[in-house]
Amino acid sequence: MRIYLTTRWFGTFLHDGARILNYKLFPKNEGEIARRLERLMEGEVLDEEEELVKGEKEVIVGEERLFKVANYRKEEYKEIEIDPSAYGFSKDILWKASLILSEKKVKEELGRMDLQIIQMVKSLDELIKFLNLLSERESEWKKLSFQDKSIQILLNLKKVVEESIEDMEEEIKERMSSTAPNLSKIAGHILGARLIALAGGIEKLARAPSSKIQILGAEKALFRYKSGRGTPPKHGIIFQHPLIHKAKVELRGKVARLLANEISMAVKADAFTKRDISEELKERLERKMKELLSTCDGSQ
Image (cartoon, rainbow, N blue to C red; front, side, top):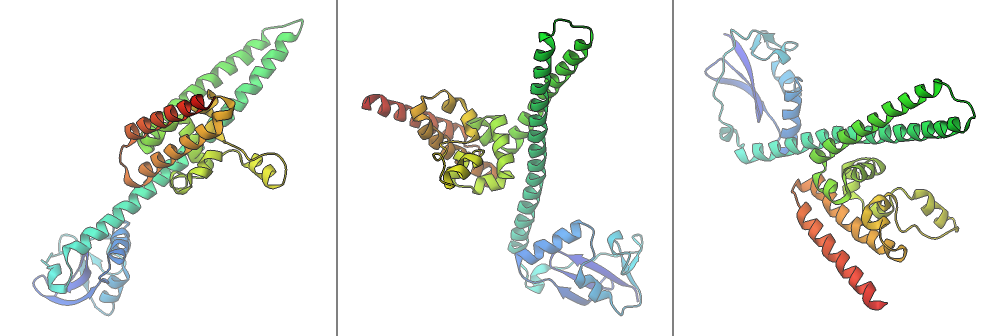
């Protein structure tokens, strides 16, 4: 008699093509089911499959991933109908397990995009530093009483770096638009990418309180303050946002707080709900800015 091994989302079964001969069920837990589904997708042999075929002389399988524990002969393999409800499993468990697996895959993909954005920001900063260095060399060179064709090499290199910066910024904008659309629209693509890089990832930024987002990038100033020197920083890298750096000096702390709150909401939507709430956030930010400015004007 030929014996076949068939694995379903709820367990693994030995059968002869018509009858179930033996089986091992998976735990009735969506998390455990999700873990097994992931291993199956990655081409691994499950522990239950190994245990079930142990001691059997010849088991035929139709999946190449099982060739180490059974005989992989796709043309001879036979399927069998197996009803999950007959073994106490509902489709609801499969749905929940699939949801867990999907969320995990999304997080992993998001993590990979995070790393790309972080590396792009680092590369952009290095290019900007290099460009500044070249500009300094150019200024020093032009001060010389004599100049030759050698300066053209420097100018050509400077142009290449400038074009590389533009290309990198465009690439960051493209990645940010797909990965963090809400954050991009509230903070701007480049500033949003810098915030992700400083936090160490989009999910870490999403879990950070708005007070921390407000001073990201001002760690040295914060350390000085905590060491008893100087005053607490009112803002970090978000100072680059036009709402802050164009505001009156005495208002910058309050504007930074408002902006950090909206950035916090935006990045939470990008990391968790995936909903586009950018227009809602922009309207609220604009309204709060008007209220802040009118309050300050009225108190003068």
